[in-house]
Length: 510
Ligand code: BES
Ligand code: MN
Ligand code: ZN
Image (cartoon, rainbow, N blue to C red; front, side, top):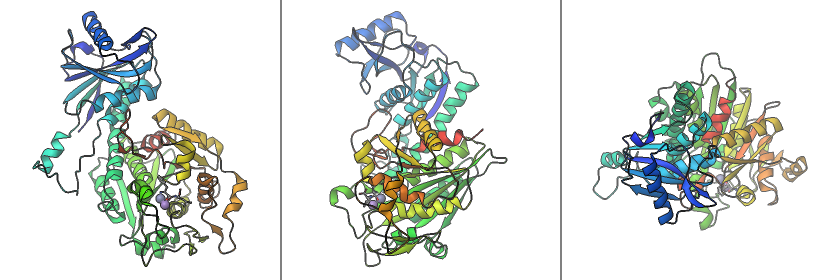
């Protein structure tokens, strides 16, 4: 297991396998960033190496140097921070996070790694710790999956992928604030890795019932007291959850709503998180083309982020009551599948005309938002890989944030910023609401292609209880990384949203 600790010891003397130091690009070429505290002969050697390998000091550039004179660690890894100087101490947190992550990705087998990057304050220390932890992730096929055929036993495979002991050299001292920041990064990192594992698990292994079991298992293994309850397909029909029931009815793997609660004594606030958990989105009868279907095991990333955020909030003992609602279903075509033009009745009695069975996320979330609203929380946030339109508008690195309250929406965008996750505010224009009008039911679940991210948001808004501040985070792009790893982000499931949600909950802690 990856562990994190903080030290103020001299980096050159740390007995680590690898010492990570920053490199920067300056007008005179690549150089070392501040924070390394290395002796002159080490600096001279590393500068010579940077020049010789024609390094740039740009982000995601990593140079490894063995046997550096005056450095106890076996190797030094230089990780790019981009433009800087040998005296600059303040770097953007996402740059530090990415640089730490990129460095740790290149030292997979090492048992101990120390980082001496510029960390003049607790926030930058947090960013380095968070990025370093996040960079250690590998999906190791543990759990119910078949073992590797290479002859390695499952246990051995897992031991090989056990993370390193990470020590962050702190420029912000090693007082309580620094220690707390690193402890938080470890809890967040482990929770985010769980979310990544859930997303990466093949959909024949992760379906609604097995997802619910995984949540129960993880909750009971946790040091924190988290209660988990599950509504199965019968309970969902009985409870009038027509949205999720309709989506799930075409699959041999029936739907579930999992409720996870962290309920501290004397909470400062009570909040709800709702996650889209489509364990596979084939599109249903409106079947997706092959190219659009191949990544659709990631369509439960919102539910995974919610589950991980509840876990982290509980393990950090936050004085906020947090309830997560995971809306789990598999969207499949079959003789029992929902049809385009069906009308279903949602949990709150709203009738909805289904126009396209591939617009299933909003149906399961609508029921989830009704259920969350019934408890009158102080606010609700839902997270969902909801629309291709989000990817068209903002690309694969930036989530779209919508909501019914501009102040609250800004809080969500700010939380994403401080968690190092990209997010941008998006409107819910009332003029677009008429696209959802239909003579056949109270509302249709989609409009035309134009503004598809926004009409999806407007649909969800219908199911949010009166007066409850609500935000919707569309993570269709950032949830799953089809390209290569980058900074602290691995290929595959990214765990996007876990940091944002945790930061947001912390913001309600008074
Ligand atoms: N799960 C998809 C959205 C998606 C697309 C997630 C790409 C991740 C990457 C969602 O259920 C979907 O199919 N949305 C449709 C809605 C449309 C039919 C109104 C879309 O965006 O095309
Ligand atoms: Mn779909
Ligand atoms: Zn979907």
